Image (cartoon, rainbow, N blue to C red; front, side, top):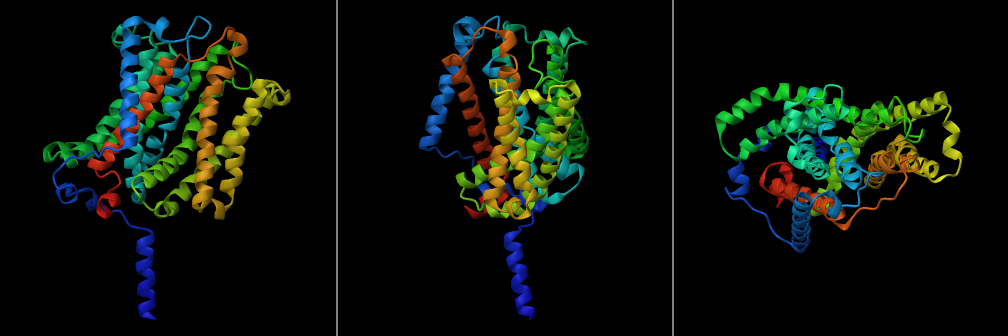
Length: 407
């Protein structure tokens, strides 16, 4: 009997590995004191796309927005704002969500997931910053908001939040960086200030997500009422919060495929996060319905127009179906069910941000817009840059320590 119990304990340990702080030390034993980045056909393609991006960026910065984009007076905000910035910021929310779970709630089993999410969020915000720079008409005046504060501008609030959150995440990464780059004194400093950094990052992250939505409050006379609302800031925050766990799942699956990892080990950790996300989606859905009913626009979603159909698509794919899937425990705790729900949630939030920028505005804006090939090349190149940076750090820092132990 004792032998059977011992065997069961060993099996449990294999299925639910416990991460200890010591797992993230002794880099020389893991990496042999070397830095590495193995090339492959996919990575060669990614670097080719990054090279094309660099060419397009230089052309845009030297020649202006006109020759390099299809932006115009009717559509001053295009692909870079919708995809690189609004979608990028929302999908980077896994960073502040997992920091809250791992370090504020002090659930230690989530700390290694928080590391992976931090890397994605950190580089995600670098992509956001580059996207904003590309979208500035006179980009060489980017420094002016630092010396001429626009106290009454939501854009200024967003700028402060982006800079503040990027700075906070850089400081958070210092804790990881100085594990590998062996400077004990600096690592000790970063370790001491980590609690303050975590709290500051959460506050700025919460403000930033809602401030992005609040930008559109001023567009009451131009935005379709299915999306415009005095609560749009809250909707942006809630959608970013519930997509955070979904991004952890998507990132985990992709990393598992790339590094031949058994994703089933992550299921017991990620299932509770998805359950929390489900309840956030329920709150989001109920508030959406109440808001539409209160403003007298609930039936607008059934009028058969293109905006109403895209609104229904966004809500059904990104909210309703995931709620149904995640409400069932056996689906929520299975790999196919978890991944399906997470992918739908990510698609739904991306569709929401695209609808806010394009679908909700096209009737009032007039004109026509489709991204120039240089706009597309820059967005694709930025995503490729993010992926390559993520791979480099995973392969040279203990972001996913079990991988280096097994390979």
